[in-house]
Image (tube, rainbow, N blue to C red; front, side, top):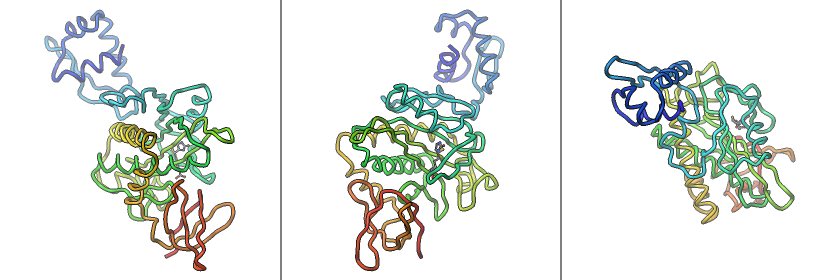
Length: 318
Ligand code: BTN
């Protein structure tokens, strides 16, 4: 009911009288007053002026599901949102929800994580209410070998969303880093649950440094605030990501990987460079030649031999 009142207030410019709210939402004036108190408790600034009514003055900087869903307009992505102040990792919660049958497009987000994780067993530092820490459940009809495509798809999604909201281009370093210059702005983590021949579900996690300050970041990282000098709405960024996801994922289902690969290549800072790629099988060095049709990186060694890597850490050799 609180959410309905909020929506009603947001849809009307200026003041709304208790009587109007009471009439439209069919609840007593006392109940409305109580709900207003509840909203104030979670950080909404609502003024009440005699004879005029109520008006929202400010909205808290929180990732409340009803804020993300307000005016979202997607059909699948973000239709279900699970939100907590703190989680161990949004990946764990999303995984549990997916096992329990949560639908495709379910989003898990939190203000902070106590055990946020990155690839290769790294930690993802998650200072409270500064960054975006989220995981999305997908249920693609794919063989497990092809899930790397979803990491590339998500990199395009995040880059496009930042471009739309903040107005600058964020580049992609294969497979999962989003960079500004040489600094890391965001990372993507893809985890899956699969039978040998079929994916049951994929959880895609994004960590994006939004309003994070330099002392809260690991070396070599940056945030949107540090790059632009201004504070950004995390809710708007998440909404844009969900819209981009909806569009790119449905295109992927209908038309395959080609359009994603094309956009990914335009945003890539990896291709054409001399790179050193390390994975559990060892380290190789050569020129990053291309991305294969399944999302793997093709590296041409000095001997001319071309090797493919599906995962790994890329460092620029020059
Ligand atoms: C990486 O660059 O290694 C990937 C980082 C992914 C971090 C995000 S934050 C939200 C989600 N929950 C996690 O524990 N990790 C991902």
